[in-house]
Amino acid sequence: MSEPRPSDRHDASDSDGTFEEIVDEATQRDPDLAVIEAGSRTLRTQSGPPQSEAVPARPADPETDRALRAVEEELAGRWGETKLEPSVTRIAALMDVLGEPQRAYPSVHITGTNGKTSTARMIEALFGALDLRTGRYTSPHVQSITERISLDGAPVSAERFIETYEEIKPYVEMVDSRQPYRLSFFEVMTGMAYAAFADAPVDVAVVEVGMGGTWDATNVIDGSVAVVTPIALDHTDRLGTTPAEIAGEKSGVIKPGATVILAQQPVEAAQVLLKKAVEADATVAREGMEFGVVSREVAVGGQLLTLRGLGGEYEDVFLPLYGAHQAHNAAVALAAVEAFFGIGKEQARTLDAEAVRKAFLSVLSPGRLEVVRSSPTVVLDAAHNPAGARATAEGITEAFSFSRLIGVVGASEGKDVRGLLEAFEPIFAEVVVTRNSSSRAMDADELAAVAVEVFGQDRVQVEPRLDDALEAAITLAEEEAEYAGAGVLVTGSVITVGEARLLLGRY
Image 1 (spheres, rainbow, N blue to C red):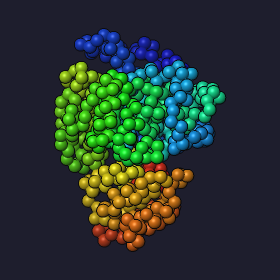
Image 2: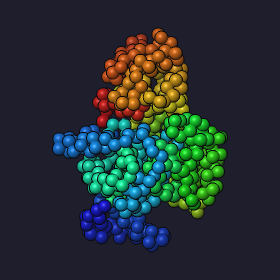
Image 3: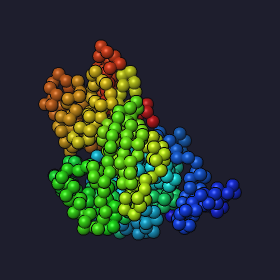
Image 4: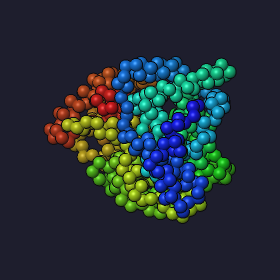
């Protein structure tokens, strides 16, 4: 990969003495660490403050848009994310010819069933508030493929995404020629992320698995901190049919000597994860034991939290996200960042409380109980399994006072759609079933047949096109006598939510 440009180096453009000033501030720290940290903070100063975390629109420049579409088409021609060959052989070969870019920075590795992306965004925000350059790799994307790779808290630009792809493309083709199967879409994306992070360079990478853990393409990193968000039944055809079997696959992210941050888990899943941690001689911190949510109050635009971290309590933390599940994600994220700095294991202290408050205040999580329209209020949430749907139902009930809620549901084939619909049945007055444009989308009539069994014929409407479904749901909400009290929740799939976001003009 390319070397940092002269303009990126602190010793080439620090005419105002910023680098020396930051080193002087760190006199109580190890001199070498102080210099490393100062270099990173100077790079951040040159780059400007972290960009606002928004879902990017298509590039305005026609040439850039065409180039991005060409890359997207090439990636789409590979195995999709749902076609897997459980092995890290190909991604390891790619890392080898790229010069092992994933070894150039420490990593926090995140697995689990629900809450991974929100937790990753929170961890990223905390590191950023503590003056570390971050790289974040998450999936799937809500609207733009560039969302998957973020630097300094914002998705990479279309230009940088294209450049990164073109840089690694010859190496991808080299590996393709030597393997029985070509690298998959997700494997190439993972290679791009790891290369982009090394090229930036970042101080820490926050990496979300694609699926599972043991054989996931991301698992060529050695995460010094492994995070396991709540485990539930999902992808049962690939990961197992019980929480214990799924935990066995996900425990593959636990590396020797790492610190493991465990969200609250089903007992059988926790047993598997703890056994793996013992085998790996890893340190474990459990939500509800070593860290957790002390208190939470619903507030305008989110919730006010008191969190207990590994080093102590953090009060008056405002989180601009809805739902108890997001509060628990915040506790997990905080513990992960504390563990990264050795708090609770090597040091007895807390992180800077103001930095923590600033970080959580900045967190956005598109498509997670996100309000995208008013009159009537339209909320988007990417819940796609029963556990996620239950958390969403609880969150929307707690945070909104809808007198009548209309659901728009578009799900993917192979999901537990009955369990999903049953979780929403108590809160939906009516449901409009639809489908998104993905080839994996469940047929609207098939989904409707299940919905009728759950809701009854009179509460189900079928609109095969998503735009028609949104219009129908909004019309149903507007029929409510108390106009301002009605709402619409669009859910069932990340793809459904992303397409609805576009249709509703949110980019």
